[in-house]
Image (cartoon, rainbow, N blue to C red; front, side):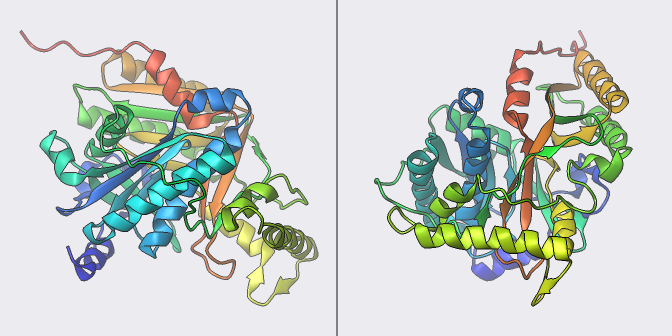
Length: 391
């Protein structure tokens, strides 16, 4: 596929505005032949989270997306942030460069975050040969931002193959670096306003009843929608910036190699101080308005997504949580879905901010005590109910 064909495919992807209909697979379009999936996840992420490295785990997942989008030179390529990893659709002309970027970012994650990130490049032809597909649509989060949604079973299959050691991208030599321009981790954990932050994963069973699963997704989303901001953990007015410097060293390590990080640290500190000052004084600096940026941050979060199943990190009250749990338990017992969830008091925000002067900054939400990784672990421990086939 040529660059022109890639641009045409991305421009023509279906866009929908009602998240309740995210499981309507007729809205999705198959990836063209020749594409591949770049897949990554942190090895033993639950153990890392238990050691208090939850923020580093999220940073690792976001860094993979950053490295790949930077080498592809655009944010329009489909991806999904999974908390401890990511999946990105890669066009044929970008496969070689993205493979190099995956190897380099895995090395940075090992050396600077102290985590083992496995990565793989899975050809779409292999996905389809195994009986799966990768279909893409876009959800219109707001007028300035869309997020890609993945369906067809191919993303989940690719991740499973990676964990079995197939399609592995070997880690780059020591000292290798990926381009992580834009990666940011400046926000404190966001405390729940409604009751609890809940990370939810719900996927169809191996004997899918897709109409029933689509109805389930719509019902779960409808309950979440009753919370302020549709369950978005971030307030409508945006999070309030504070003079907090806990993420400065990590962000500086993404920007510069060892021995050259003092300037990067100063740059990050100055940016934090200026943002807080402008927010508190309601002043602007050129075209940058800190309060409008905070509002845009809320609108540009990926707190809900579809990646071969529903994934949400939402802020809900006790009544809403009970209703969602009942829906999921009943659907599980009926053989409609498998699910896991994890409850916590706060959410984490990790960001890709190419420029403070544009509205294309992206913000990834996960639960602050393990979120999606813990929900996935919970799902593995639950019994699987399959409907009986007719005799």
